Amino acid sequence: MSHKTQLVSAIDIGTTKIVALVGKKNEAGRIEILGMGKTPSNGVKRGTVINIEDTVNSIKSAVEQAEGMAGIKMKDVFVGIAGQHIKSIQNRGYINTGGIDKEITKSDVKHLIKDMHNIPIEMGEEILHVIPQNFIVDNETGIKNPVGISGKRLEANFHIVIGHVASANNIKKCVDRVGLRVYDLILEPLASADAVLSDEEKELGVALVDIGGGTTDVAVFYEGNIYHSAVIPFGGNVVTNDIKEGCGILERMAESLKVQYGSALAEFELDNKFVTIPGLKGRDPKEISFKNLSNIIQARMEEIIDAIYFEIESSGIASKLGGGIVLTGGGSMLKHLPQLVAYKTGMDVRLGYPNEYLSSDSIAEINQPMYSTVVGLLLKGHEYIEQEETPDYVSVGEKKEAEVKEEIVKEKPVEKEPREKKKTGFGLFNQIKSSLGHVFDEPEDDAKM
Image 1 (cartoon, rainbow, N blue to C red):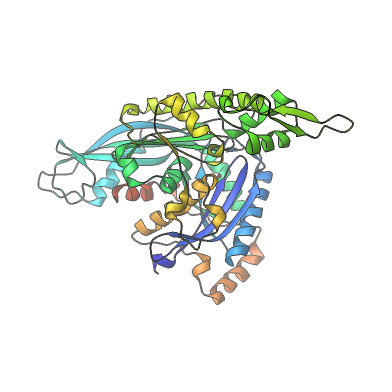
Image 2: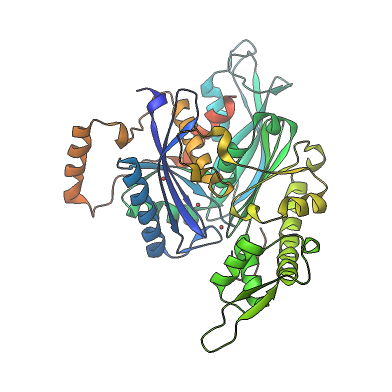
C-alpha cells in the first residue's frame, strides 16, 4: 500500500471546539484535506473531559461532517491530549550492549527506551511519550542516531511526558463510543509544533505557544530536540469571562466583542471610540469603550504571558532561543497580541499558520492558527504510519467499495458491542522511531479524526 495515498484521520478535542479531519499526503508530500468537521465543544474544560455524554455527542457531530465531506467511513484516528495534568521531565539512562565491537541495533535502542517506562512516577499517572534528545556511545556525545555504531555503552537523554491515566482513558472512551478506535494519543503541543515550526527554527531554538480556548500549550525546542513541554490551565476563555464580568454582559456578547473589537494593547485604542450592544429585555442599549475593553484584555493576557515565559525559562535554555516565540491557536489571533508578547518577553514573535504543510487543493478554511493542532495530528499520523516497519493500519477510505460495504454490514448487528481496541501504549515506540528519524490553577474558565 502506497503511503502517498494513505488516508489518515484526526480529532482535536478542545475546550471550545472539536475538529475532525480526514487527509492524505500528495506526491509533493503535502497534506490534502479531504474532509473536515467542526462543532462547538460541550463537556470539555481546560482540555480535560468532564462530561462523557456531551463530549461524545460533539465528537459524533464533527466526525459525521468530515465523513460526509470526504465520502469515507472513519475508523482509526489520531487524537490530541492536553490538560493541566500534563507535565514533562528530563531523564538519562544507559544500557551495556555486550562488547566494544558490537554494533548498536534498533533493539538496543528500544531496550533503552523501554527502561524509561520503569522510572518512578506518581500514583494514577502514566508515561505518554518518551522522546530521545541525543545519544552517547562510549562517552562520544551528540549522536542523533546510534544504530550501526560500535560501542559497549549506550546512553541517552530523554524528554518524558507524563499525564493522568484517567484523563487519557476518558478521551479514549469518548472516541470509542462514537464507534472509532484511538490509533494513538499525541501530546497537542507536539502536534502543533509539527504544523507550524520549521526544522531550522527547531535547530536554532524556538518556543511554540498554542493559545486555545481553555489551555495554553508550550513546547520549547533547541538543536532539533524538544527540551520542555507544559500545559497552562487557562486560555482565551478566561479573557472572555473577564469581559463578561467587567462589562456586565452575556458571555456570547463578550466573545463577540473580543473577536471583533478587542486588542491586547490598550494604548492603541482611542478614548472616544465606543461599540453599542443591545440591552436585555426592557433595558437601554449599553455603550462599551474600546479603551476599556482593551484594558480588560491586556490585563489578563499579561498574566498568561507571564505564565508562558515562566515555562520557557523552566526549559533552562531561554537565552538560546534564536527563533523566538511562535504563537498559534485561536487565541493567538487577538489583535496586537504578538506585539504585547514581544514587549513582555523581549523575544522575536511571529504567528504560526499550518499553510507550509497543506496542499493547494485543501479546504481554504483550514489554513488558520486555530487549526494548527488538528493539522499537526494528521502530520504526526502520517509520520507514525510511515515509520512502522509492518504497518497494520488500514483506512476504510482505502478499501475497495465492496470491502467497505461488507465491513459495515458485519458491524451493524454488533454496533452496541464495544469494539476490540488496539493496545497502542500511546504510541511510545512510534514516537521513538519518529525522533530517531531525522500548571497553574485559576478560577473557572478555560481550550482538541
